[in-house]
Amino acid sequence: MNQLKRVAAVHDISGVGKCSLTVALPIISAAGVECSVLPTAVLSTHTGGFEGFTFCDLTDEMMPIAEHWKKEGITFDAFYSGYLGSLAQIDLVQNIFEMFRTSKTVVMVDPVMADHGELYSLFTLDHVKGMAKLCGCADIIIPNRTEAAFMLEQEYKDGPMTEDEVEDLLYALGRLGAKQVVLTGVHFGTDDLGAACYDKKTGQIDYIMSKRIEGMYHGTGDVFGSFLLGALMREKSLAEATRIAVDYTCASIRLTAKDGTGPRMGVRFESVMPNYGKLFD
Image (cartoon, rainbow, N blue to C red; front, side):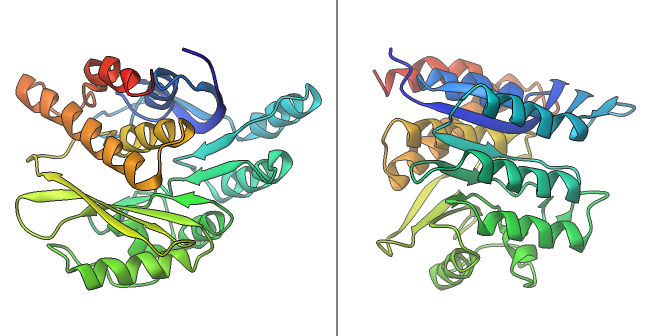
């Protein structure tokens, strides 16, 4: 399998608990795409379900890393940012995008900051505004419903949606500036869950749904985003890549639910990666 593209993943590293870089690096690599990393922080574990975790902020290292890459003439076909712990990091990441961006560079932003109708702890509305600005300079954004509501300054509505409600969100998110939008957490009833994707250039909207799996599992947003970007880098269309991301994320969750190991350690994405890689042979 040839290494066709190079992605820079801008995420934190959690030593235990599958999320962020420990998810992005193996999944994107499995698609036959080189994955470089720009770590924003190092944690002993992720922050969901663990107490007393260690945290090392790498904000001061981010720009020197990027400047060294630039000096060495290293180029990237895509950038993929996730959880950013401060306004300073948001500003840095936007500057780094501009340092390396060409007409062919794909910038994908996952505005990781909220879920289930609430912002993550320590985040404020200033963070929301900063993340909305970062999404405005992206090519692709992949918010969940809560993040979409916050960035659009709308009331979050739980429960099933109508297609009109989903489309209104997609159009509004597109007006932030991104060319393509993938909204996660979409469902129309009690048994379905998935994503809706919108391409502003064509106006096409696709709904990619799967059977709902009960429970909440940590790291699934990072798993989804990584499967999605890997497929996009291998020339899959937005709808095709979203279908792949939904299917393989759900397969990972099903395996974890069957094991009964609980959500704290993340989902068994490793078990589906061989089949994921075969998609691109």
